[in-house]
Length: 387
Image (tube, rainbow, N blue to C red; front, side):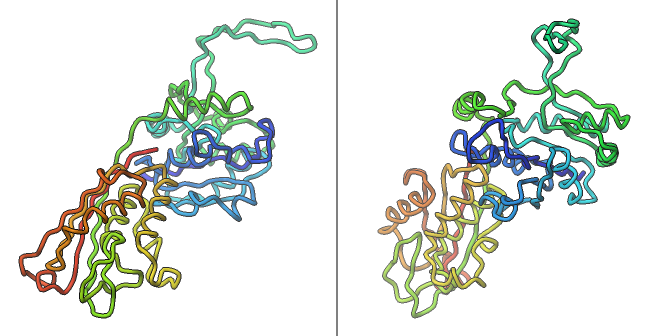
């Protein structure tokens, strides 16, 4: 099953005020948009993401939208939310079976809520996350505002996002919207197009940031009610030949030796393996996709600096390193006297403690090119967690 996520972030959030578009306002050190996109970047059922943005953000998107392990497209939003969704729908993969739509202003939806909404859409055709009303509900008239009737609250639900639809259902809903009707969500369009919409229990923490009064609550959720801990493990491997006329740099430490490692950058094989392990754990590509050896800007580059950049990519994907474990396979030179400095360099570049970095030196017992001292190889494992 192919699942596409559409993030509706095409508005400016006038009710929130301020010079910064609402979706770029930060809570807990990350923007609403970054948090909302990360929900779907890390969800195992989602295959691609389409983000509807104001035109200026499409032209110059934030860094976390420039790099993604999943296909990610940016489209210009419309004047209304439903127009933004139409623009996004038009660029979705035609093989997509289910499309899940989420507001960028709801940055705290859980992975479980996304899963339940997608599952319900597969079964029914359309599903909406919603909270049952807990208060007595009154319908009032206007001028003057007086109660017209009291509505039984057990029939009232307050809609949220995500909302999910089988592709044909959403296509029908969008076609109905072309008749000139104006609504506030796609579930309403699906209803009016004649499709049943399943209600999925929403979450009280899945708040929508709309007014300035919502921001202090969001800060509390960002700091004290964060989503469930997600940990991932990635592995990295690299090998470089030893050649004459090059310095030998390992984990940022230059080691006196008659040969160095061949490569486009400084060929720091330890840093390279660590980068691949970290990026792999976050599903963020590999070292070649971010720092290709065909790009002259990385010629002779410090690989410890590349490791720092990879740590920033990791943070943009919502993850941070917990620990690194590295095995270096080399006949010579002996590394024991340099391990502490190496560990400190890796720790500094990744934002963890030196105590959370392990580097072990091994030989290849004279076997193969490693055993003959023709190359150095490194295996690395990285544990990362969501931020």
